[in-house]
Amino acid sequence: MDAINIEDLERELAEYEAETQTLKDKIEKAKEAKHTQNVEKVRQLMDELEVTLADLKPSQIQIQKVRKNAHGAGTKVAPKYRDPETGKAWAGRGATPMWLRAYVAQGRKREEFLIVNAAAAE
Image (cartoon, rainbow, N blue to C red; front, top):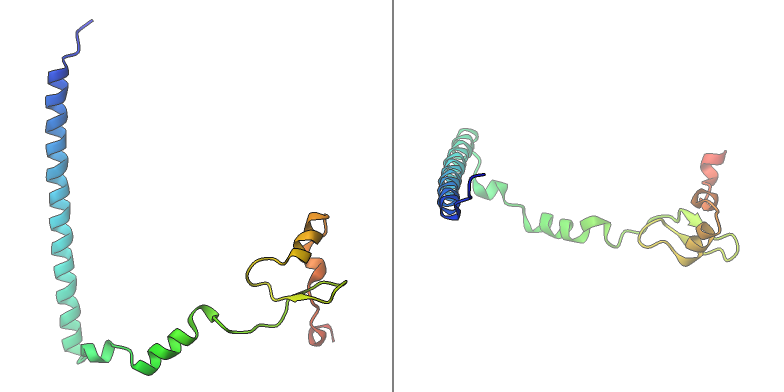
């Protein structure tokens, strides 16, 4: 059996690491070149369509609307589930209430507590 020469292995490893770095550098340069090309394409298209950066920037009113309605924050929805014993209701958003978790733990199904829409039942 041939003896493993650690120095040869370390030299080979150094060569692979150098080759890896060379490839990483090539990838980075290719990404930069592609980005430059994409930016130029966007500039040409903006010139062609007569669009400016100001046209792309949202107005202050649009920003305020987005902030106000972000992720439905503060938007109330109708309750979806009701506890038949206490009458407590849950819209199905956020953490599951303790009363519903207790029923599910007893083996009951969440669907049993759905509030039936009176208009849909007619």
